[in-house]
Image (cartoon, rainbow, N blue to C red):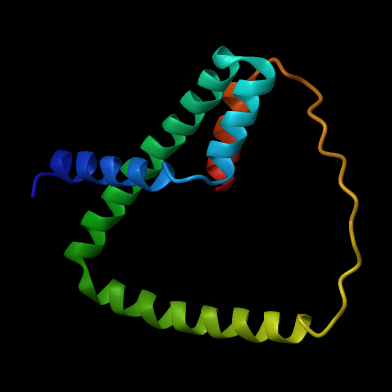
Length: 124
């Protein structure tokens, strides 16, 4: 397959994956209700740019891994070890009682919802 076809198929699938209600969509809805459609639109544009960049990078990696199956087998083994270590860590920390943490979630500046969208999408 041509890399552009793979990119656009991946982009379509990633946008379909972002559509169900989640952190980013609910944040965009709240911004739209509280601050208006323009700020929500800029927030969504920031999200779309990050999704596009992530799709491009994923396409490049997929092409590389398709050409090097030996690396894929190594990555599978490393992933098993990492998941076992993470499982053990969370099993051990689940026994401890977590203390509630109070977080002040006020937004200091409402000037750039675009960069907030970029940041939240990158974290997601």
